[in-house]
Amino acid sequence: MENQLFIYNSLSRKKEAFKALNSPHVGMYVCGPTVYGNAHLGHARPAITFDILFRYLQHLDYKVRYVRNITDVGHLENDMDDGEDKIAKKARLERLEPMEVVQYYTNSYHRSMRQLNVLDPSIEPQASGHIIEQQQFIDRIFESGFAYEKNGSVYFDVKKYNEKYKYGILSGRVLEDLQSNTRNLEGQDEKKNPFDFALWKKASPDHLMRWPSKWSVGFPGWHLECSTMGTKYLGDEFDIHGGGLDLLFPHHECEIAQSTAVHGKSSVRYWMHNNMITLNGQKMGKSLGNAVSLDDFFSGKHPLLEKAYSPMSVRFFMLQAHYRSPLDFSNEALISAEKGLERLFRGIETLEKIQPSSKSDIDFKQFESKCYHALNDDLNTPILISHLFDGLKQINDLKEGKISIHSDDLNNLQSLYKTFVENILGLIHENSGKGSELTAVLIETILTIRQEAKLKKNFETSDQIRNALTSLGIEIKDKKDGFDWELKSTT
Ligand code: ZN
Image (cartoon, rainbow, N blue to C red; front, top):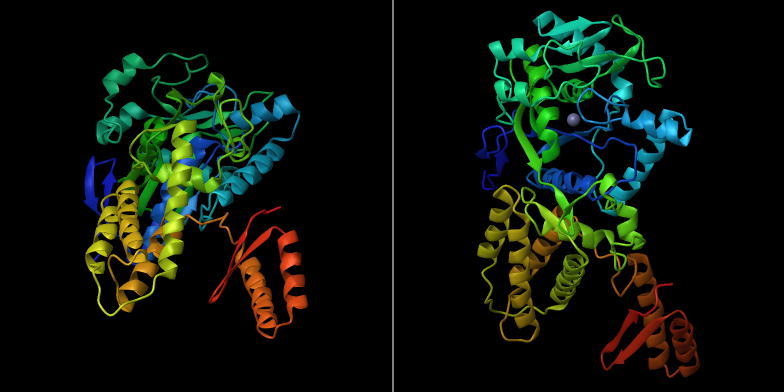
């Protein structure tokens, strides 16, 4: 294949040539949000990172089944097996049914993702909809000998697992260190070892989300849902598993242990992790008071924000950093991203208007291969973007007549920008000076009628049209060979 994609595998800790298990089919699983609050930047980064991968794999003609789950049960406050369920806590505080909380924030998450032009996954399973499958998965862990029951709760026996397989292959943590570093949390004395994790927890009398099981009325452990739903929809072994770096340990490490216990090997070929986001150099978090939701960004209504930022500016800003690099958000950086994006769109508009010539000074093939090379190198979007910006200089030179391009190269260049900017990077020009496509077509139709009226010296009609359009905020510029126009107000 001409386009060989290399991706960094967190498991082998090196870039590997991507080879699909059942080419052209690709199975991809990404840990989705725990839905107990509005979507924030921390949700946007994995969603956008794996959206680029989803789009690019499809561009390379793979048929991708993309599963991104909704965590609506079992995610406890401290990410280990302690504290209240995050959703149940929100429900208690707001006096809502837990599923009301889930529905409300799932809707809000979907809205934010669509604004960011993140494509919907192929399947979006909810943990609460897969309780039976999770119980069956526990049965299989029991059969393999790595689960034990205590007082109606079921735990994974990490020490026993470590004797047969190696625990910690993803995070590089060793059991001896974990032993000394894990605090003995309250209520964890049921565990044989503090690093064991829950597969099923018996519900306390006031616990809201509960299901019957052979062990107790309770709920599944958080790590179990992804092993269960990943293999249910993608098979015992599948290609890609992604998520934020914060999920690498313990969440993904535990997933590997669960799946290996059942299948004898890890279910996942390539583990991918996006790095984290900071805000003005600070780690983001509700307790730190700097958790800015995506709605805040889009509306500008947050004390840390100087103004509103469009979803496309936020998306473009994220893509200007490699997904494995940390990324700091600040007003300054966002404003410069906003300007850069506008420049990119203006360049594309200019490109559409370039006239072809009989000779060509553009080496299109070389430019195209540089763009592919960037994405093939572990989705290096910042390098791709810098190539696209380099291309703008040539577009400008073409516009000014300093260099020329023949029609084949021109068509190729126009479609390259469209493919990379719109289809793969998913950047769309929302606030173009011409409004929506329908608006543009309508205005141009009306202006053509006006043009004809003028030619027939029907100035009454032509002025009438001009006045009507001007009052709608449309500025008309008469030129010797026709007209141009711009939408001045978009109200
Ligand atoms: Zn997960």
